Image (cartoon, rainbow, N blue to C red; front, side, top):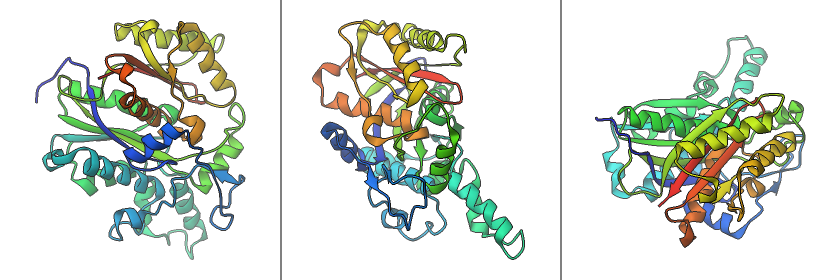
Amino acid sequence: MTTTADPPVLSAWSAVSGFGIGRAAFAAGLAAGAQVDTELDPDQWQVPVQRAALVPAFDARAELGRKGTRSMDRATALAVTAVGRLLNEECGEWQREIGENTGLVLGTTTGSAQSIMDFTRDSFEGDKPFFVDPARFPNTVMNCASGQCAIWYGLRGPNATVAGGRLAGLYALNYAARMLRGGRAETVLCGAVEEYSRARAWLEHHAGSGGDSGLLGEGCAIWKVEAGGGDGLAELLSVRFGVPDPSDPAATFTTVIKNALRMADAEAADLWAVSPCCAPGVYGDLERRALENVLVKPTPTRIVPGDLLGDTAAAGAALQVSAVLAVAESDRTAAGRLALVTGIDPEGAVGCAVLRLR
């Protein structure tokens, strides 16, 4: 394989979210502005809240079959389902070419917090500390979901998991771009996943990270990313990250956005759309101030899937990118123009990506 200097191209995508399963369900839900939060069954979910934005009636066995799903955790099932929908519904004949040159990069926070906590609890509550279900041990490893996706669909290229909280989707996209530029793969399936679980609900409840986390959601977005030069939906022009200066965090975020635009050889006036994460509390205020420092009038189209899907944590930025692609397909004015996706993580990182729609 040879290296290329052309911008990587996002050529197909699919998603699993509170809107439903598959690209069509995501695009339709976004266009309708559908609120997807539902009341939780207290017998199934012993959590400190009453509502969440779950994938509707999601069941791993119903989606993937009984074989191989007995011990599969929710995060892994969401990822395997999303990759399968991308390959089967969006990539057509290309899926026959999957092999050594197809990689996978998946963003996450910690993997499945529920699996980690359940396995740890079993090690203390069993008849002896070592009496645990060994079939569930792989679920405690952060790269379980990406590994299962590769096994399930025969992806034999490079396989990576990137932990990055709410910026995980952008980190994964940047990682995939480097993989392609370095000639490590010809095609990369890339995205991020987050599950809803009792463990996550309680962790968020006790976190106290800048205010109420609001409605929690879940989902997975996956894109097919290829080396530049071919047909596709959007080009990835730049991805930038930073750690805000505590004395003026909005200024740091502003600089990160301006640097991303400069790397894309663009200006704020060139933007067709902006997709902020709109995090709750002080983090959302920081992002808003940074964007106000950069954007010019007329302001770009705002695309905010988090307003409908809730706080999808690690999957958030990935769903923002997918939302941009979905809206662009139905907006003739988007072709050839730019979109900015921004995000912030409570652990202290900020980031953004600039895409050129095709």
